[in-house]
Image (cartoon, rainbow, N blue to C red; front, side, top):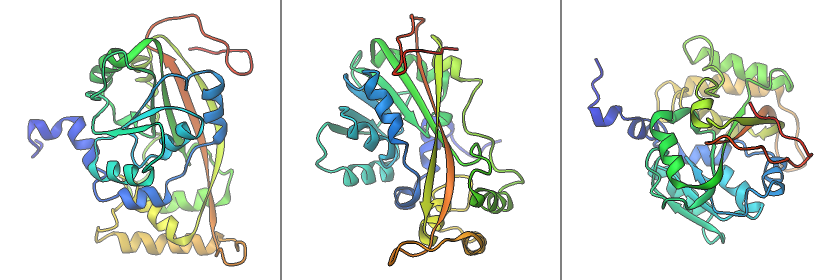
Amino acid sequence: MSDLTPEQTDSSVVNPARFLGRADVYAQARPGYPDALGAWLRDLGLLNARVADIGAGTGLFTRLLLAHGATVTAVEPNPDMRAALGEGLRGVPGLTVQAGTSEATGLAGASVGLITAAQAAHWFDPARTTPEFRRVLIPGGRVLFVWNDWRAAGDTAPFNRAYGEVVRAFTAGDPLPLRVPEDDLPLFMPGGFEVREWTYTHPLTRAALHALAGSVSYLPAPDSPDFPALRSALDAAFDAHAQAGAPGAGASVELAYLTRAYLGTLDSVAPAPNASGSAVLR
C-alpha cells in the first residue's frame, strides 16, 4: 500500500514533485528542439493564435515557439521550473507564465488555438486531460506533443551507446522505454494525428553531461548519495569519447536525439495541407 495520501497520489501532485530541486540542471543541460520544427508550425499557420505550452518546464520549447512569432502562455506546475522559466525569459514579449497542470490549466475557455507539450505528455492522465484541452481550445484547435529521445536515435552518434551503458547501470536494468505513450495518443487526439521526425545533435561539456544526468527523473538526483558514483561513470564515458573543441571552448561529446512531433485534433476534420502539400493522419 502506498504511504501517500489520496491527494499525493494524484498525478498532478506527484509528477511535478519528481523534478523538485532539478530545475537548475534541467535548464543547463537539456537539449533544445530543431528550428525546423518551429518553422513547420509557423508555416502551417498554427502560431497565429495564442499557444498554451503545458508542462513548459524551464522553457526550452517555449523559446522555440516565441522565436517563431507565437504568443505563448507557459503553464508549469513545478515552482522551481516555473521560476527558472520566468527568469530565463524575463521581458520577452508575447509570454505569460502561470501555474497549472494539464488537468487544470487555469486558462480561459476557448482561448488558445494550439496546445503544446514537449517532453511532458507522458505524465498526463488522458481521462482528465482531454476534457480540459477540449475546454480551452478554440473550435478547430490543434494539439502537439513532442519528445526528444536519445534512445530512438540509436547509434547515430558513438556517445549514445556509452551513455546508454551508464544509464542501464543506474536503473533497474534497461533504461525506461521510449517515453511516447503510443497507446494513449488516440485518447489525447481522437480526431487523428500526423507524425514528423527530425534528428538533433546536442553537444555536452563534462559539466553539462553531469547536469543532464542530474535532470533525469529516473537517475539519482544531484543531492543523492548515489550521484558521485553516477558522475564517475559519466566521466569515464566522457573521457573515452570527448573531442577537442574550439580554442578556449574545452572538450565535449555529442548526444544524438530523434525529435518526434505528433500533431492532432480532438475532433475529426479534413486534414489541412502541410508545408509540403500533403498530410498524413492516423
